[in-house]
Amino acid sequence: MTATQEKTPREAPAQASGEHADRAAVRREEIDRLARLRRPSWGTIAGAVGIVALLGWSSSSTGFNAPALIAGGPHIADFVSRMFPPNLEELPVAIELMIETLGIAITGTVFGVLLAVPLALLASRNIFPQPWIRDTARVVINVVRAIPELMWALLFVSAVGLGAFAGTLAIMVGTTFGVARLFADIFETADMRAWDAAAATGARKSQRVTWVLLPQQLPTMASYTLLVLDGNVRAASLLGLVGAGGIGMELNQQLRLFEYGSVMTIVLVVLVVVMSLDFVSSYVRKRFV
Amino acid sequence: MSVLEARAVSFTYPDGTRALAEVSVAVEHGEIVAVLGPSGAGKSTLFKCFAGLERPTAGQVVVEGTDLATLRGKALRLAQHRIGLVFQEFHLVGRASVLSNVLVGRLATANPVTSLVHWMSRADRTVAVELLTRVGLSEQVRKRADSLSGGQRQRVAVARALSQQPELLLADEPVANLDPVLAAGVIDDIVRMVREEGLTAVLNLHDVTLARRVAQRIVGMREGRVMFDLPVAEVTDAILADLYANEGLAADAAAREEVAA
Image (cartoon, rainbow over all chains, first blue to last red; front, top):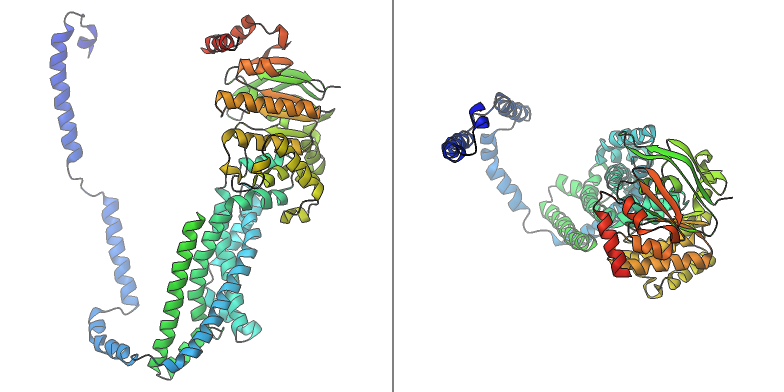
């Protein structure tokens, strides 16, 4: 190094070409080193072993075994074949109950989303900068959100009795806390410049919410709401299993009566409704955003 | 009594950057003052302190005899309502209508309950539409703000600030995002409206020509200090060249002056 630093201008070209060759060799070595296959780190190996162990443990605890599945193949085929032809006499009942199911899902989603908005505002750092408000709201949301809708349905059936009302309440609570979390995240990523400008006009926080924040975020919120409605129709189809109204109750009953043709009709009605809803909502969501 | 007064205002950002060092400026009723200076001079920080968006680290900002830092809650909101702000990047609600953006300026005095569902009084709506007409946007009242051009958006923001029926209008580089021809038009509109309403205005500008054209007084800032505070007639090219010295902008400013002359 000292030699190169002390070189005179006249010596420089000759030395430079030698240096050039040296540098090229170093670079080639560097390329070779980087291109070589890397031995997986001990962390990666340990992780892979851990995942295999977890899979082994969880499949053994559920009694999962491939031979039983293969041996059961004919039974499954038999079960499916007995579902044909679908029993069309069941159709009017299935449609009527599917409408009730949709009613549960839509009512629960709408009220749930309306209740989610204030909760989400409390959980947004940029709306309520006080940590105790935000943290409390977030903890409440996360705890309640962890309770599955079917459990809420069981609770509400014992509180308000069997039927669609219990189901609607279950969907509503599930939606409120699930969506509150989503909305809080949406609010926290909002562009706050117009909000700050409105604050500087002397507008109240509540006014800033309805005049600035919500207009800005409504398309995203609507898009998530449609996605949640999708999920809620599916959830509402199962609520009948615990007596909370909808098509699930009829499905359960027909299964117990071994009326597989009727079961097929019910499954088909659910399938058609869920798929068309999915189609409509993805079309509308594309137009929103 | 001055409408707006900075008394030895200093401001240091949390990272230790000293943006203002004992700045004292007084603005009298009906004056239009331009604040000039190279970037980093502290103009924007001074704007924030004037507007009550930042609190000075030392010194006082007094608006109509009141120190904003002493106010809380409703009193603070009503004091802020007396100051209209215009920002470099407009700060509008893009998805909302032009009218709705302007009505935001009326919220502070509107009914706090009915206004939540966008139910504003006829009087409020009339004020907003009238201002939009005066800035030449009567055709755009129902359009979405983000469908407008840059110059139109800044006019909407000006209408929003004026709908507060403020005593004082503060603008931070209101035309820095617009091309020069549009910029002159927007500045002329702002100044015309300010004169018509008999307001007091402080405009942060980076364009010497514009500042000379519209202001009665120019405050020159550099490195957080006031370098000069003179009536526009007394601001010579030499003084301006000094303000922008070593910024590579002196030549620019002089060149623009020649073109204008």
